Image (cartoon, rainbow, N blue to C red; front, side):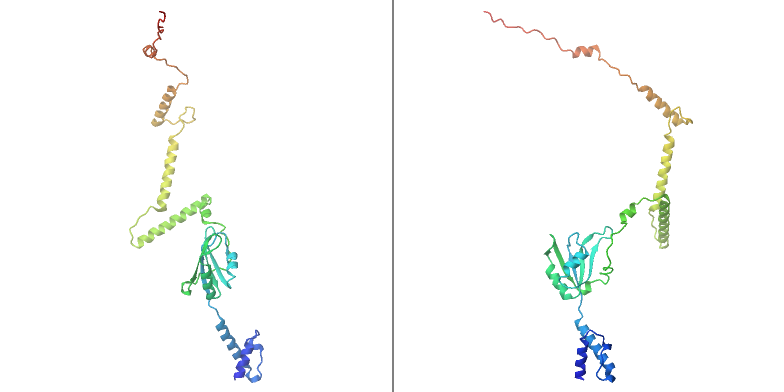
Length: 278
């Protein structure tokens, strides 16, 4: 039996499948294959490594997934990598999570690369214990990142047609109506202006502007259909008075004579020269 187990271990070291090996005795072929498979399973369980995750912060700008993977590959096999990015702009947030094949390698990386000066930045590395690693941390990490083709700002500020605006207004009013109904069913006596009040104020402003435009009709007598209301007639009279008051001629007004005499300077008297002859 010991010789058979030794032979099974020797065969298990070979890369070929267990079914391709033949036992020395044909009646022990099935038992021999089971022993080979059992030895291989135990060896694989012994050699199975526990993966470890490292948090890397203060990453320089412009450093993407391929460069990070290539740099940290020198320590050991990198199984998964996730660089945190902005959903709106697609830019890097400056930190990443790297999963190594062995947790011993991950601890070495965390100790070695912590406070390491990399491209004028001090990297912050920390080993994450398995209980702190979220199950969805590396979800979709193998997909190639594509920059958003239509960010939220561009989508919000895009020019909409009248039909699109009407649909959007209708949808907002419907949602607000459902919200008010839900509040009433819960027994909450809460009132808020909402989008309906905003629409009402917009309509009132439109009515006011239309009234002002009607009142500001031209007061010229050459209009085809002049409006003869009392307010318009008063405005027309006031406009005529202003036209009469305006004069394009330039007039010079001279000050009165009394003011002119008061402003005049006194005449200079001749100076008397002293008599120097003796």
